[in-house]
Image (cartoon, rainbow, N blue to C red; front, side, top):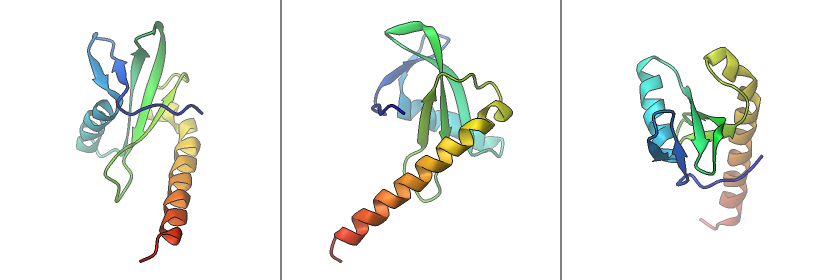
Length: 108
C-alpha cells in the first residue's frame, strides 16, 4: 500500500487533470444517482501516462471525505471492483481503530 496526497492531480483519459479527492467526490455523486456507494475510473499519473491506474472510491457513512484506493488492478465494473472490497473494508477498519485510539487519548 502506498500513501499519497488526496490533493495529487490525476490525469483522466480525456486529458483533464483533477485533484484525487475532487475526482472521487464527483464519481461518488454520479454513483449515488445510480444507487451505488462505490465508484471507479481509469486514471494516470503525470509521470506515468502510459501506465493506467484505477481510482476506486467509496462513501464512508458519517465521514466528510471518501475512502480512496489507487490500484494497478483493472477495474471496469462493479464485479471487477469486488476483490478490492477487502482492502477497502480493511482501510475502513484501520481508520476506525485510529480514531478510537485518538479519542481514548484526548481528555473530554
